[in-house]
Image (cartoon, rainbow, N blue to C red):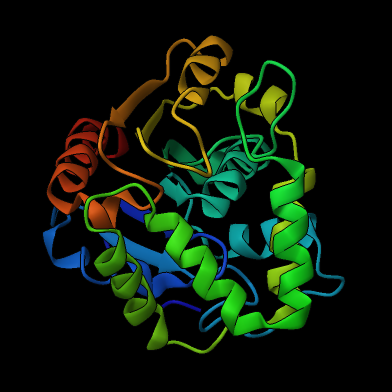
Length: 258
């Protein structure tokens, strides 16, 4: 569990994506507005959160995260973390004052009229995960950086950032893929009452930028930004532009949390 000391500052909770851990945020922490207290959490089974909920499923993962999130937090989730963040905002509204999504959608799988990942790609990941866990995660990191001008160095930066923490549990990795494959939270997303912002990559191969128009239809009040040259990890490939987006949101959101 992340170290957290109660202060009067609004709390920014960061949730990482599949296959990684809170280490992905660590190079950003010094440049996030000092007016907030940052709480990077590990999803159960990832990083320092090695103890698995029993049974390990979507509901128990959400409950464990909700236990750690202070009331009235600013919640920011990337990829799988964004899917969980949407569910947390809907099921535990007192915990989430405002919601920010990074390359995340309420429904990751492609459906008629809904841009997303093809089911076959998810199945390939699930099968390869059983054969070679480390190789599968490495491939996933490469895909997350794909499309950006600095893809190779971006993937290396992701690997280095997560290497400082324990390797994810095979149970959590498999379940995380199942969450991404099976969960369709579009109705939950459309029903959110909290302010929502989002940052997406125009070259993202996992969460196509075309989904932004569909998200806007579901939640017209959402403020969604697309970084044209970014891929699935904009905070790595386009650090400066991402920090501008994040800190602009925090500047606007902070007075509402006082």
